[in-house]
Length: 359
Length: 185
Image: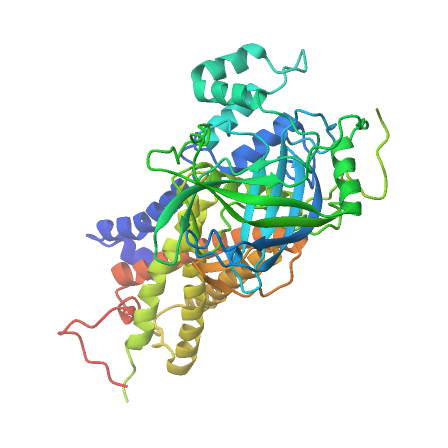
């Protein structure tokens, strides 16, 4: 040590001492900068997870969004008709096992079911020889936001006021005035026709992906899971806090449910980067195969709990487009997955062995 | 037989290639976990195959180090510094092997496919277990911060040798200039 001190204080060595100290200090600063410490405005996955926690209250162990749900399983059988557009193995005429999850949008795991709440379906399709595909699809026609920052800002604008315990309409109004695309999407969502339950609902990708075929040719696509179940008779009365889920699990106990995966082929000029804008009607649709779900299980100990439905887990033959939402979802889901996996979770609302009391 | 002054050519090549790869890896990692932008997916796509490449090279390097050894430190160095130098090298080897292994195990426990490039996926090395995933995810971050700290100490030490002590320790990892004394083994 004394030798280093002696050399460091030797005449003419000041510049060398500067390099010895400067290089590691500069690296440390660059590292902290890459981590975002000097740019607190940067929207990180942790920020978005914190926003959900502040809007919906902390619910340890639960998904931060789409918190109320139930596990399902079954299989997907490709028709072969999507294979000219995507080389993904699961589109061939073969069966791939599926783990899925039906859920209500929103971060409250014990919210009551209601007809107009947004319903979602998450899927993990696992072909025998690899090439797994995960997705989350929703029963709304368009997404509300163009990017994660707008989503986060809207959640903050909709935080309940301390005095009224309700969102401030003025703040939401200000957000919508600044984001006409969200106002437009909201009105399209309000006008959608509501199905009576999970089983006869159609679920949309909202986001755009690229199908890439064996020749390397890319096609922008969106898709819809279209129910084969007809709407049930109108006179069936639905009651109970979990009537949507109870109806689904009761139906699955009796018979399997089926959906057609309809792939919508984009045309040049169709918006790919903006999920708030629907594609024009009349685009070519391809029946890519059939999803069959034949079993429901509660989340606690169920097969959908230890995985995250990251929309960027894509097989060869499907790639992201310039739509920024899937990357944001992928990043935030990972953060939510890590947080909830390390927490002690209370029982889920949907437990197949009991019914919750209440209206 | 005179004392060798340089690391073996393979050791020097691996050192500088891996120095770049590991530093890039640490910056990619810390940037990607703070990103919700389109860069996130590209950074994850780089992070996984680069990590596995570092793991493979680290094993090769360990074998080479055991087989070909290292030039001795100058006898003028105090005992404390020699112990510090030795233990920091052990820490570097341990961390550059442990970090990719923990990352691989973490993805396996989280039931993520361990994708390298499109169509190439590594098998899981532990069974799916969400609680284990959460623990390994935290460990991955702390080990990475630890590795970055040891690297900063390593760079500082190397610069002290190269610029102040000028005792040949830093030069042992460089290529000989033509006028330098020839290496005899």
